[in-house]
Length: 146
Image (cartoon, rainbow, N blue to C red; front, side):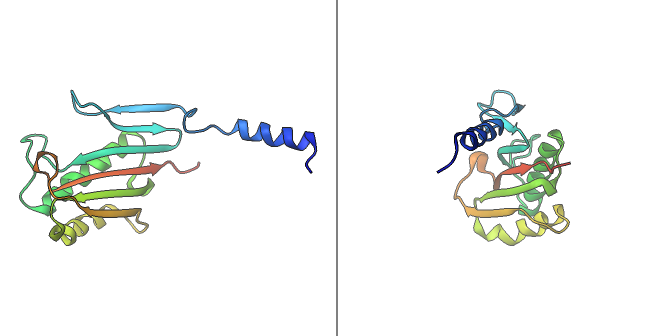
């Protein structure tokens, strides 16, 4: 049996830890008119919405999957930088591809954005993507402790 003072101490400690619902949140806007945020920083964790490799200038994806992967990864990197984070802070990435044959081309570009430690990742064949995109990516990043 635990004593009442130990139970009260455990309860106080549990209440002192902020939950995700209690953490301060920062919302990063998506393009005008989009019904979602491009990312949400909750405490030290950044949740990054799905983004496609559609070129903002044309609204269309590049025909070369490597060019699409670069466009996608540059956008992911910019989103992280807006939140004061780096590519190394990514812990989880999910990639959707309209054609699984682009796996090797995507990986060739993807690896250039990381030094040594890679985030956990899924690469999923999705058939068609919004705007006829080649790829869509989303992820989660965590700020390192100082």
